[in-house]
Length: 336
Image (cartoon, rainbow, N blue to C red; front, side, top):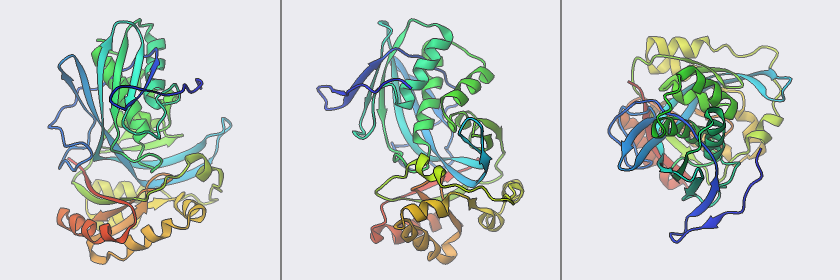
């Protein structure tokens, strides 16, 4: 991994870094939601041309199912997961830089803008892959909380591949981009297969899953994040892995009750043991009763979601949760 650079600050107070890079997008469109706000029926990555460049709205993901099957020889864990993209977006803009440099600005001071940022990493790998001499100026406006299990960094990397493919007229085939996405990070390839997919291997083997209906969630993100590495370090794979079939059957048939009963995350008790404060979020969601059909932690945490029976139930759940001081609360959706 490249050495992190010390951040610079521009005249607007945003951190700036420079590196040589490149990447690609899919041409999915739609009306843009306000940054980080609910957009009914929109949960795909939105890539569109703007004056002088490309803008991408990069969605968050939720894990409806996550089982850890074992540890691989390369040090990663073999997983089986069902992910859905939801209507919470980071916003990225890309403009051409003929100098060949890539500069990254970000509104989140906790994020590096150097070579260890997934946006920069993705751009560098793409630039190397195609041998391009062009560069880009990138501005990342974060709305997806970091270290939350919502894959904001992976989504931003996928957005970079999509945007630079369009900006630089690369027209790389989807399978080539998928391979590159898998090399960059475990969840990156998923975002080319939204709104729902089964992810296997370390997350890079992706198979799209059709959705028959829309789903509404209330999302709670505590004011602290979880280290993915710390959580996975404590995993002891079960001798009898939980089968993925029930959640896939529930998505195929439609109907919330079966899906709610099928929600599962092998990492949740580990995260709760590492940070017992998370049980407050778990219990608050469990106490919402008839508003939900189930709840779960996403990924390695720290965010939790409730599967709500209707959009009105999701809004009511958010109203109940917000005064409890559990952290950031938002209503999001997923579906056709």
